Length: 136
Image 1: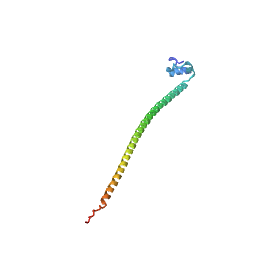
Image 2 (image 1 turned 60 degrees about the vertical axis):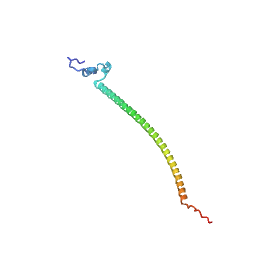
Image 3 (image 1 turned 135 degrees about the vertical axis):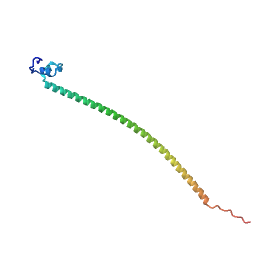
Image 4 (image 1 turned 90 degrees about the vertical axis):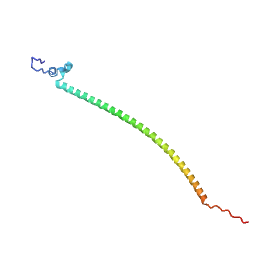
């Protein structure tokens, strides 16, 4: 073990870890004795990368869930809009049917009035028979 008075390096992994990373004293002794500092820091780097990957995936999932929720809201709004437009179309079609019936009734009435006028004109054009004088 390396002491401040003894500058000779300790070749064990525990000694190297104590010298370069004194904050890892919480690591169990069996791991400190069998892991080299490079293996320890490599595993620590891999763990950090794995945690970063998991956090990134979780962030992506939360973004995807928000987008899915937004898309579901958009679909719901579009369905409501389609339903309103369908109701408006039905109202318009029913009003057009009423107007078509009114137009048909008006055409029938115009045809009847035209026939009546033609009949009156025909009656007006026919000569009235004059009364003949009686001879006495």
